[in-house]
Every structure is written in structure tokens, then in C-alpha cells.
Amino acid sequence: MAPKRKRVSESDTNDQVITSSSQLIYETVKGSHEFTIEGYSLAKGTGVDEFKTSGKFTVGGHDWVIRFYPDGDDDHGYISLFLELVSTGEVRALVGFKVVDQSGKEKHGSQFQFINTFKFGTADSDR
Image 1 (cartoon, rainbow, N blue to C red):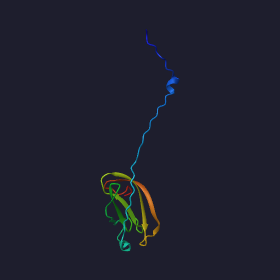
Image 2: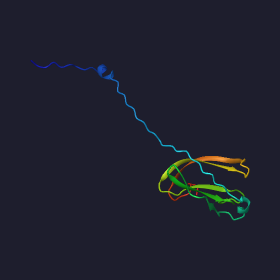
Image 3: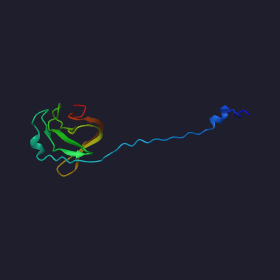
Image 4: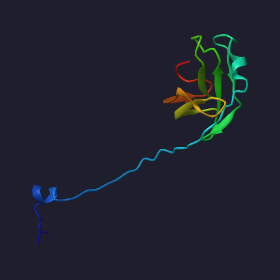
């Protein structure tokens, strides 16, 4: 006796429910660094594109420094601050700077933030 074959209609196969899921988790680390400039008024007048560097600090397993240009990096009359990655690797970071006076009060219009991808041995991409 020959085996019986069941005919599967198109509607039978469309009733199947297939589910799947996946997950992508980005590691985020929060940190901060306070860079104090003693005698700020004495630093003014050192010249455009002249800078001093903060001490090295670590956030998120990466080493960083801040470059401080008292007379700006290209525009005299404004200070410039740059965050520089000094450890090996590439990292995307949300960065914020806030400038306060000697009493701890925030200077008007001195707080800003940006997102940038930092690479080993280079200052931020605008440099």
C-alpha cells in the first residue's frame, strides 16, 4: 500500500508565527574632571595658539588631557579649551565644558557640550 500524502495549502503555511529578538547594548560611562587655573589673569597675553595642558586623567578606561589656550587657538580675545584623547583607541564621547569664576559662579554663556569621536594621538576633529 502506498503512503498517503497530505497536500499543504498556501493558507496552512501562512498561519505559522515566527518570532525572534536581538539586543544591542552600548556601554556608557559617566565621569568628570575639574581643571583649575590658578592666576588666570597672568596667563592672558601669552599669545594666540600658545597652550598649557592639564594633568592626565582617566574616564571610561581612556586617558585624556585638556588643552587650555588663554588667548585662543586662532582668535585673540577668547579662551579655547580642547579635550584630547592620549590613550590608544577610538571612543565616541559626549563632552561638556563649564567655566566658573574664582567664587564658583558659572560665567554667563560658558557652558556647552558636543559629541565627538576621538582617536589616539589627535585632538578633537576640529584641530
